[in-house]
Image 1 (tube, one colour):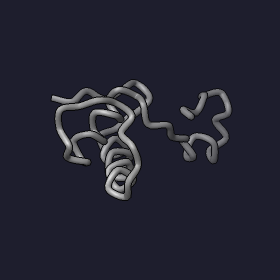
Image 2: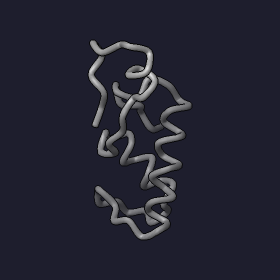
Image 3: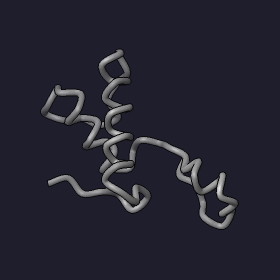
Image 4: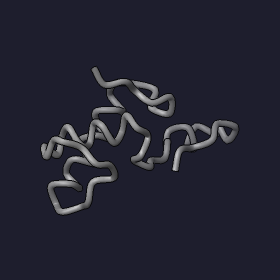
Length: 72
């Protein structure tokens, strides 16, 4: 079972991040970690769960919550 990193607050966001990263891997991006699997979707899930995929929470920035730091 894959665990969500603390910066990813929902399953939906986790899936979106992993899907976008999987598309990058399919387009030729290099994996950010060594794995035994070559499947881009699984590699992307592992990278997101290891908190290796940078992202910004634009919803928090747009709502005026400047106190919450965005993951980069």
